[in-house]
Image (cartoon, rainbow, N blue to C red; front, side):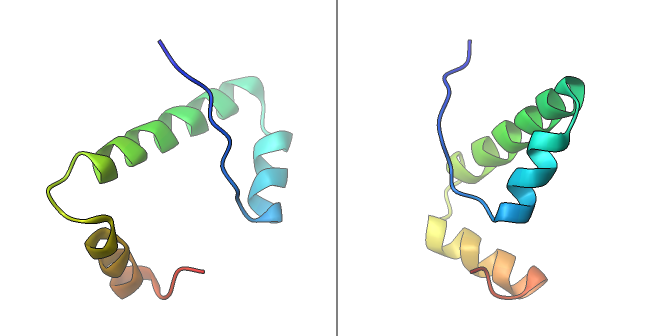
Length: 61
């Protein structure tokens, strides 16, 4: 079972998603779902997770 949500993303990401095939959209949905699950099911605070991302990828806008 899934529940739809709306999230804000950069315009270029939205364009890529909209241009993707239905199959690729489902894959992207699954990837995002799994990543959000990983982030929300950790003992780390969201602040700590974001700090770790910043250290590996640079500042998050």
